[in-house]
Length: 458
Ligand code: ASP
Image (cartoon, rainbow, N blue to C red):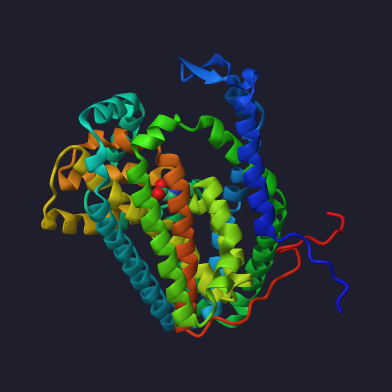
């Protein structure tokens, strides 16, 4: 029998970190010191805050931010190195276009299915009908200030012409594009373009360039391992700060049916992915969920598909056995354009707001929502709260009052955490499906450090 002792799996460590974070803040808030109020200045305005909140804000939250920053820090170099390597490994441009087409079509298909699931649930549960006039006015008044910022941001996006998104795909300066995480799609376009160039030049010239990116890629993967050492502590800090910042219980109760509709839809989406993956790849649901769970937990804790991307890539490749040529292409694109959780949420939220304002949306308008929510989710950045900014566009297209955003503002963060988890799961599922279709799903290759870190000196 092997003497090797198996340590606690990474997803358990992350779960423990999350639970301890929640318990820590709840205990702190329950002490008389923690619950007592004080005030701080934010953006020139005095705001009341509990002492527990202030403590966590000053002494715990910065560690959570450091963890997220570290993940974001490697996103651009990771995309560059792995995509250039992945594309040039294909050795053939027709393989690239075949995979590209399948990827985009599968992403579009899952997104439209997500919106339809959202629309069906919200029409059955009708959560907006349970909001009376008084609750609606209170909710809108209490969050209008914050919601207005999102409405203003969306207004800027609406000023753009119809082809702006396409125009934005081509960067005019790669260093400029790579210096802003919001320009991830431009970095992807450059990396694919560069990879195509590498395929087309003679091997004698491409060899040293490829060797450089191979090595570079390996360094980045090792950096992910190092950052993941801090994951349980990072998620502790993130969850502890979320608990002290969360809105009052009353708001949750008022919006309970809306939240139930979103959560139910997201759950159905996860079941849909798991079933699809096991039908197509013949791998068990447990295999898929176990492999991807650390990325799901990080998506939940960070609310950002972009910040989670490095871990998603590592897990899909090493734990689900999808080859690098596929993951390096499918996952970065997925993190930026495939947001099934977001599109489902946008559909539910739009109809919920319409119901709460007493509007009855006809079938045609709901069909329109399928199109706008699909496009809005593609356009949403992979960062916290981005789905809500783009929701304004869905509302405007359907003639639903934008002020309704204030209705759902208070509980957006927890729902954002859940929809980001679904977004990341969807990307992983599609890479398995596309991988299978091009014969690139093999056995997992779990490397040292992946789930357990050898006790060696760093
Ligand atoms: N936070 C989501 C993501 O990063 C986007 C959103 O729905 O707000 O995937």
